[in-house]
Length: 156
Image 1: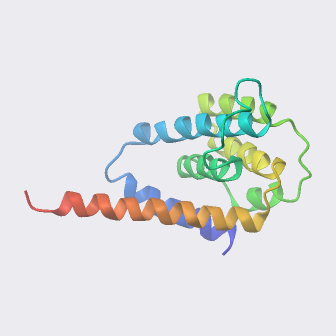
Image 2: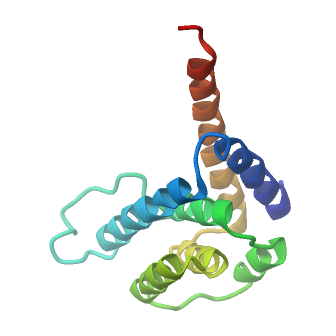
């Protein structure tokens, strides 16, 4: 599967969500995911007070969660994703997290997705892993949507 197919899938699922949520309500998702990603990075990097904790999902899956949430709100292009995977990323992940916070507050979804991919790459994630994790996460999102739709369509 290509990056474009992932982006198309995100847009399709987002369109369905927007039948039940506003864009303002969707904004809560990347905020939540950024916190989860920050926790996983702190654990992975052995930050004082976090090093004793066990990771939940780990950095790579949490980075994909944030990427999906940001891509749902923005207009990232396949070429930007592909470009991120050509870079050698030596940027400190805490600097990238700070960039993510700034992008989130500015609602700069495209740059947020790029910073998120850079975090993914910093922790050794490959393009193939990225696509695989995106599909897994999108399958889960679609499944939960189907369950919610069943609940809303049942007679009272």
